[in-house]
Image (cartoon, rainbow, N blue to C red; front, side, top):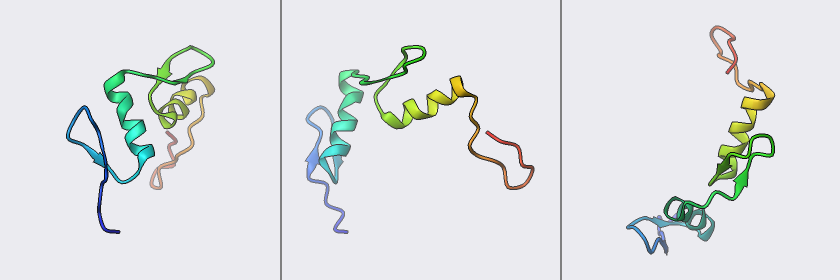
Length: 72
């Protein structure tokens, strides 16, 4: 809760609260994309972006508008 960010990126001024966030951020500088789609081969720096991309292939629309019910 102190707001301290001891993990500093050596390539830019950003700093992070934990080492895993710094590691994830460093992909922006290295261009590394370790998370690859098994269907089309597209690569992603973050696993969450791969999970979102997989919906392109599955057609999954997990969210619905509370007003009109349309899914997205």
